[in-house]
Image (cartoon, rainbow, N blue to C red; front, side, top):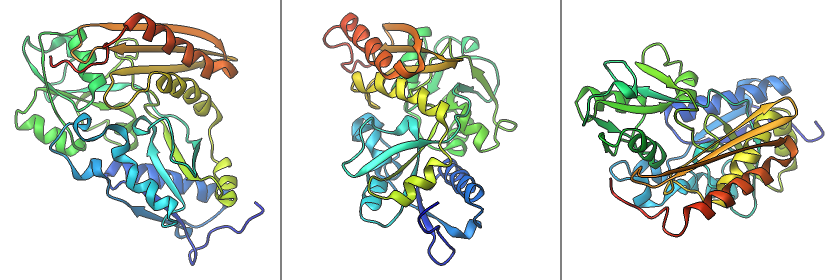
Length: 317
């Protein structure tokens, strides 16, 4: 390390949202950096930043602006120098960063699968006809309706505790969470859930991955983050996010994608759905890891050609 390391007197400031999961991810980042450079935890300061997506809980994400809702205020504070790095759930991240910011550090990826959560246990297929499922994800909404068009899907936002309370209050009979979040919060034992195989419900692009954003001109931070970057996760996300970018993906478009590494090869699956779940188009390809981004763009182009104009237009189920 050529530049000066942070100290308790001049800590590295880590920006994050304030949810229990966001804080767990920020603390994991801090702990990995501390271990890599033999620094005390006090050499880092976790700075909680409230985003628009956190403030507005009573409306669907598509109504108030999509993925940037969880990053805009954090990125503004980084550009102004109030924080040094930002820790993000990569499935919430837009494919383009504001000028002056770089996102090129990823921690080892967690479980990519969705979790089906119901107080009575059981699986999605076991729900009674006409049952109510709650989710704020357009991808999950469309996937559920594609598999079970008899179900009713309602808007369902909030952290783990909020969603469990809504289930207890009868707002819905079931909902979904990410397995990665349950594992990072150590909630797999007390939250009634069933992991959904990724060949049954394809995850969101970059689900289970943590990304760390920095200022492009901050060489000290760039050098520190290089020490904790996970190459395999970066290779997976290069393919998945190229797929997403070619589709102009956001929280307003139901898209799933997953890259899996096998030796020197990468296998990529992608799908797009109509918002009402009436149609799902999917494709897959394999190739060399270094060709992942081009594979992502190729699958996206093929799906768009099959979809035709208006495929992503909003249709109420």
